[in-house]
Length: 518
Image 1: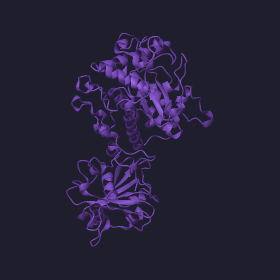
Image 2 (image 1 turned 90 degrees about the horizontal axis):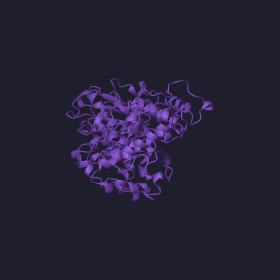
Image 3 (image 1 turned 180 degrees about the horizontal axis):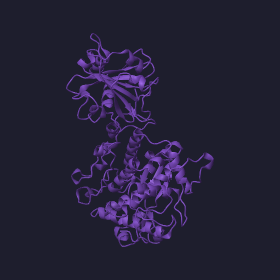
Image 4 (image 1 turned 60 degrees about the vertical axis):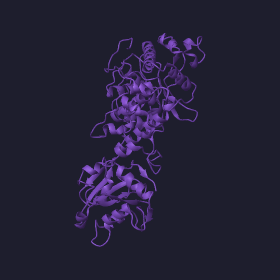
């Protein structure tokens, strides 16, 4: 428990409110409170798209998994990952700060690594010269002032110029300290993504803390308030919180004190500990498991719920499968976001691209792609019928591309501008792909009739549209069209969508969509 009065979310601080954007000549100093307004108002001019949020969320997961060797325990790893993704989807202030960083040469939140590096408390340097000299009793018999080891919360770079956040271990999710620890994590991340500075003032908070506290308010995290960032009562409260978190971590691993201290010591030296947390196993089988809840998402925006963290679990029986690294494993080096970040499994679900991945890799790893002498996917689509009485059409080509024939394995078609098309058939919609949202927009029982058609990709490899039909409907000159936009498929009942929506463009309507590279 906190050993000081706690005032909840009615914060008395500078509140970030929309107003006219600052001109470059009026850009505030990075340690001024006005810089918080500058960050928010600048960031909101380029709001994150649904696709960008999905990409950033999986990048955060990959960064945390990459940091496992520098994080003390599973609980802290989960707390870092879930806190940041919760803020990404549910805090407007955090979204604006991320956008600000992406467009103003600051750090990308998805590229930050995390550490729990402890050092000897300068108050105890006469007793200990190194972290590995400290015993559990030395910590448990101390207090917030005399605790032998401390973790300095800071935003820094490693020797390779990669942004790093160092933070102490996470308290129990049932502790009143936990929301404040979350806010502290956000604070350090905001340093990186906005370039903001701190203040040592006794009566103002500074831009970083203003932004972090506004994130906490938006997420209903109850945190204490103080008169200023340098308020002595705040400094003392931080010591109490961090000491309490360290004691709670020891209590999470009651039978593994030596293994816990060994891991703390390894990380304190700047070395990597086991990425599977292999020496801290009783946590998984005991009743001490209290991993934080997975973030919730607005059903109108991201409806995947628990599927968002496919492969993650907090149940005792799953032996802490939270840290199964396959959930952060790239699905293919041919499918990536702009900039090179590879997609992981949950990206396919969240961006409705499971069928696209299946059909694309079937062609790429099968017969490959054959050139067709048309200017682009669009010119071929405009010239093609749904189904010919004698001949292929969109339906017939889709069948052959997806299934192959006596001569060719499954293949795709590449057009003169570099755009391409792959065949899609009804059986591509199965238990592992039926989450794609087009399957619920129009048409039913996709895999019971021999549906077939085309999925088009633009010259950058981004999905443009899916057109699919069955023999009877296609023979009558009709089918189903789905255009890819904002991370999902949009049903179009008229066949003129290529001009009505795209005008003269041949590019995907989702400029942030993943790229499928031939």
